[in-house]
Amino acid sequence: MSKRSKRLQLVLDLAEKKKKQADQFLAASRQRIEQDQRTMAQLDEYVSEYQQSYLGAHAEGCTGAQLHTQQAFLEKIQQAKSTQAKAMEQNRKELEVVEQHWKSAYARMKGLQKLTDKAIETEQLEEEKALQKQLDERSQVIKTPFI
Image (cartoon, rainbow, N blue to C red; front, side, top):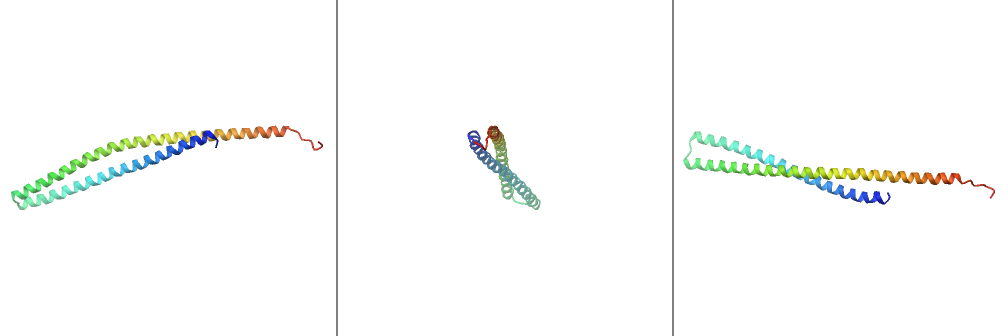
């Protein structure tokens, strides 16, 4: 590789590092989304189970204090679900930003990769032409064995 392709290779290496970093951010962001979904599913399941036990206790009869306690607990679960929904929305927005960053890093890396490949190809063609020119010049020089 000559100067241009070496310089481009350095820039390409940096772009590849940034793309790998963007890969890691993207994976982490997607994991947060998946965790958010699991947490929300657990909360939904918990609410369903607690409502069933609440209805069972209510059918059997309970005191006003017990009823108030159960309703307060259900409200806290609903607040947790609301908080979780807000966190999920924030993480989705973050994922969109991270995806845009990843796409940008990927496109830059691919563009630099093509540019580097083109520079290497051009340099190889120039070297081949120079070598062919030297061979042609040498073949034109006639050497006589008598001199």
